[in-house]
Image 1 (cartoon, rainbow, N blue to C red):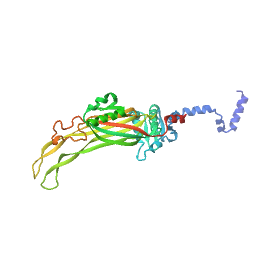
Image 2 (image 1 turned 90 degrees about the vertical axis):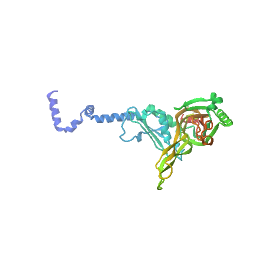
Image 3 (image 1 turned 45 degrees about the horizontal axis):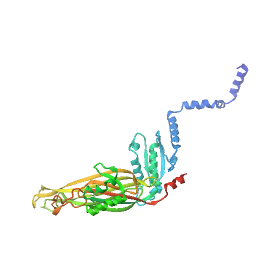
Image 4 (image 1 turned 120 degrees about the horizontal axis):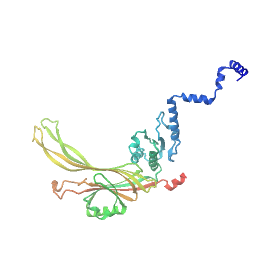
Length: 391
């Protein structure tokens, strides 16, 4: 630079404001300097925003709705996790007589996933109201959730007709003729068995029991149930016994026998969920049977002012069996048959001849059987029509 140019620039710098000269600084240099001096916390926030944006832009299921505007404020980002929202109002409107029908969807989601999916190292959310299901989890879990929700809100049938029969068979020999027609589909921890068989074979087995008079029909109920909800059927009888002693309020009597009660019976909890095509069902089954086999009479000495000091109490001999298993791909045209095991004389008299319990007069080999039939009642839209609508 020559002397003339230098003199001109110095004169120009004295005439122009300093702030005007600052604006002539290149923009890329200013941006680079501001980025280098940016606090680490601000950079992390921007990275979380970018991760959140990417998670929102992932493809979603047709049955899910956008949840971008409803993500809770200050909710922490979690790598690999994203939000999903489902409108379940159509399904919950079918069950007007229940306070929380959405719980059935939550229970079936838990049955299809593992506890680690919701209680592991990463944050996960599963929240259901009467109109909306909100989920925060990985893509693999969301795929399972989407499948379950679709079977609720887009079912081929909304209502099911269910028939349940509890039968006390005198012994296990009812299998003799029909055993080859039974298809095993499950088993329980105490030797319980589950089969499927045709409705004709189920009727034949019941007729054989009726003819030989080796069975007792404990209950026969027909009910209507919304797809996916839980049906509870229970039949029971009280068994009274002298459980102990108690002191009477009247002076001078001392201790007297106290009357207690045990409950003997069968409880079935059944939750059938149709497959997408509507020709099969998955079923969550919980069967509990309580039985009082005998009361052992025992003498005890009690302080009494009046009467003998010896009194008699009963020590109950009771037993319980439990079966809690899922059954998958159960054809709706097939009868589900459950053997609850040998429960001698359940819901029957066990006193024997003249209350003497003489061998041969008391039941010893009673088997509890449960026959379940499920039939669709109302049909909404066929799967084929639903596929056409989506196309």
